[in-house]
Amino acid sequence: MRTIGHLIGGAEVADAAGRYAPVWNPATGEQQARVALASAQEVRAAVAAARTAAPGWRATPLGRRAEVMFRFRDLLDAGRKEVARLLTAEHGKTLDDALGEIARGLENVEFACGAPHLLRGGYSEQVSAGVDVHEVRQPLGVVAGITPFNFPAMVPLWMLANALVCGNAFVLKPSERDPSPALFLAELLGRAGLPAGVLNVVQGDKVAVDALLDHPDVAAVSFVGSTPIARYVYERATAAGKRVQALGGAKNHLVVLPDAEIAAAADAAVSAAYGSAGERCMAVSVVVAVGEVADPLVEAIAARVRGIRVGPGYDEASEMGPLITAAHRDRVAGYLDVATAQGASVVVDGRTDPATSGPGFFLGASLVDHVRPTSAVYTDEIFGPVLAVVRVAGYDEALRLIEDNPYGNGAAIFTRDGGAARRFTADVEAGMVGVNVPIPVPVAYYSFGGWKGSLFGDLHMYGPDGIRFYTRTKVVTSRWPDPATSAVDLGFPRTR
Image (cartoon, rainbow, N blue to C red; front, top):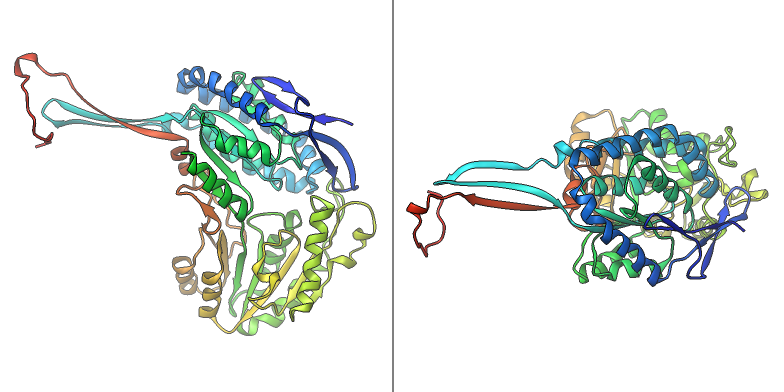
């Protein structure tokens, strides 16, 4: 059985702790490898390697750091098909979807290539007699990233591109369910010229996570995952004095007003709900059908759902692949029974899809209508190919529904009414908003993050907030006085 291990100080470490977890092929249901689970001792070794490497990397000229990132960008661009195959083999998403993930990750690397401009400080001359002030952004030292299974390449790139180019050393703890892409990214960075130890990868479970959260040499932690774990990471790491950005779960709503173009809204809902088998934090999981649009909209969505081709991600004919594990597939499928028991109508039952009769962790796309806001199908983050339709009488009721939901990651509205759209963008309680755009993931030169239970911490992920998160501002006030004019003055310094 192939063993997937760690990268510590530039060296591969396979199985020092003697604990392992299975790595499945979701399309076949077979175990394809085992991943070594780090002990606290191995995490300490990774942090020590990062701490040793950090001063030299910080002292590396900014232009050189950017040059490494440019080279990494080119290597990742050239190797995107190889990375995509790793994603499909361990996660199950289609090759086309995997290539899209890499493309969005590349955007973040390209943003980080602009570090000489992004890290530029400010200077004010003569703020007082003979006194000048300037500010600089300095790296934090050793920082850590804990990333989820659903985007095993893109989310690490959200974090490490900015963290590294700012001069930090990085310890990455990827998901143990699909661990190989992180090691491949580390290999490419090494080939790009990143010194050994600046990036370390530790595979693992809660043992590794807790060791990173508690380690006194880890200055900051970035996390993406479910809301309960995000809250846990935030509380434990901040208690240890660390800076934290922890992105949690979501229940993203797509509001469709009566004036919307039904075909376009149905296309968008299906695309956003079932891509990557619904295993996206920005997937649309609730369609809010306003007024008389409900019946024709549900009919249009159902017709499209029934035509989705489910199969192995490596098959070019497949539009939707399997779920990540058998246990997760069974959990998601169970919500269809819950929906019926709680008064909803299962319009399309993914359990009857032909793909479910073969090997692999498959569940067809499912559509549930007449879902009540009290139902578990609405309240829970299902994280699978189950789309709920909630019917409301008007716009105000739709807005209240989103306001009352504990999550605030993304929301979208489909309408031809510019006034309604403008009102929605101003009023909706969500961090990312789409107008006739169902998955409003920001481009890399903005920042990604939700509100309410979808984010713990003050700064969003990547973009300008990423630069701020991975640096500290230092303000220097200086004067080169003439000794002849020097005198004792116990008053508070004045600028005029």
